[in-house]
Length: 190
Image (cartoon, rainbow, N blue to C red; front, side, top):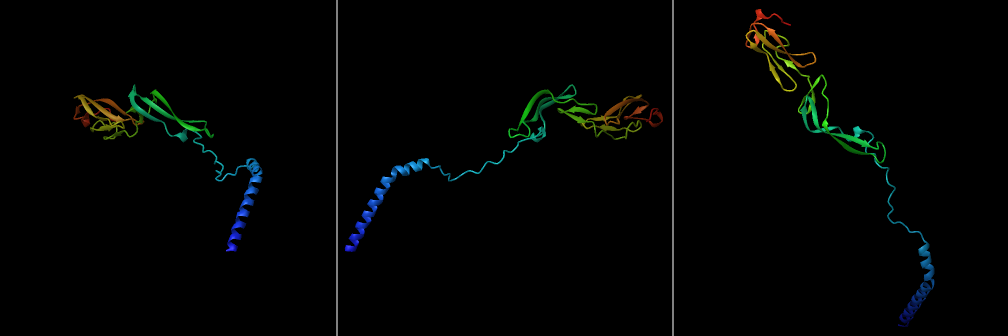
């Protein structure tokens, strides 16, 4: 039992000494703690270089038209054009420029259909061209159908496709019946 009492006394004495030593050195410990540099526990790695959003307008998409219709053979409506601001820099960004009014000018080989310029391509003539003795139909890209017909018993209206694939008509004087000239009466066969 004496041993237990001695051990307890020694423990109390050691504890009291260590407490005294901490109290005596407390101002020095606090000063060192204030002067020490903070240690980051979860440092974030350096940021990756910024991704460049665009280097040209084409990186931002394609122009699009809305509410388009045909007026005086040209499309009008709302046009949204993609634009790259500050191309090739970290501040690059895409935006749309909105324009209202005329959105295109149809040329000689196009026509306006449903608010867009459409090529005259794909003009088809069922009778093979200017064939006055065969009734034919001309079918165009704009879904129109032009059928050869007799304007009267002496005049044929012959439809054909031109070399630039547009539908044209020509009057032919002949004995006309059922949308074609009778063979012996055709004078201007081409």
